[in-house]
Amino acid sequence: MKAMRTSDFLLAAILLAMAPSSSQAQETNFAGLVKRVVAVSANVKPGEVVVVFGGKHTVPLMEELAIEIQKAGGLPTMLLGSGRVTRSFYLDVPEKYLEQEPRYFAEWLKHMNVWIGISAYEDPKAVFADIPETRFAKAAEADQYITDRLNESGLRLVFIGYPTRELAAVNKLDFATYEKMHWDAVNADYKRISEKGQELKRVLQGAKKVRVTSPAGTDVTFSVGGRPVFVDDGIVTDEEAKAKLFLVRFASLPGGEVVVAPVETSANGRVVVPKHRCRFAPMTGISFDLKNGQLQNFQARENGKCFEETLAPYAGPKDMFGSFSIGLNPALRVIEEGGDYRPGNAAGLVWIIIGDNQMLGGNNKTQVGFGFPIVNGTVEIDGKVVVKDGKLL
Image (cartoon, rainbow, N blue to C red):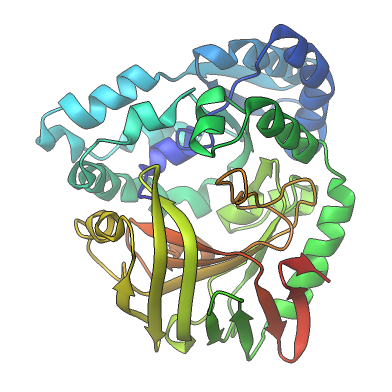
């Protein structure tokens, strides 16, 4: 994980960039998907302004969404992104222009009700992998202007993922396996996911002691305190649409995650992660300590320098404990034998995130975050075990 432009986040620019493998896949998935996105996930109402954003490879889906939005009485506008243009922005634009605040976009937000984002990039590795982190940092600092205004914007946002052969290759999976798992996760039982998410939310809220352990050697404790707990269950309800916090108004497909920014300084213990990635390359043998929330003694057997270089250009509490999440989607699973796949929403997969948590109601105002997957983890909340050996209980 690396820093991203906030406007790119809103433009669905650094999603899992995805496209259907064939017209048959489009016919199979799009008809039911667009109805569910418009009526349930985005909850579009008559007269609402809805932006549909995607790339050249997602135009058929964008068109289907726009048509369905019109049928629901919404007012759609389609915007097209480009991996080539984005790459040129980060590589070719003079540095002084990277620092320009996208104030125009803040004005646009005042006139939008819903943003439905599909990634513009079929191959995000080709777009981003070799761009210097210093240039990402310059642009991210400028985009803080948008981040500061998201809560007040009232915008609802839905992300839709699509599998590509390029991402299947990054995850070391054959495309058929990757594609099937993705669509199964998109079409999962979100009512059941929501029920499980709300159950975990009730247990987490106000928790005095959360303990995360794993067979690899992770053993960390922290306190949630009064921090808000967020559930991404793929749906934005009428009640959630009125929420003051932007992340309550956010949904993703595939969805399924509970996330919270605990009290940063309450985190103590050790994190051990056998396998991960940094800038699309393997990073293995990872370990570090958290002492009163501060990251210390970071080590990695392979590609550890990438992590250090990722954090280096950013200011603020970039090396503080930031947040914690539990995946809820039963159709997604970790594949480390015969693959290198740890999807963030996989049921029972736990993540420990370092750095930025400002949108989660935390104190870490920076522009970089880096997550570490805790595979086969166990989570105990005030004495109650909710995840055991990577399985939701």
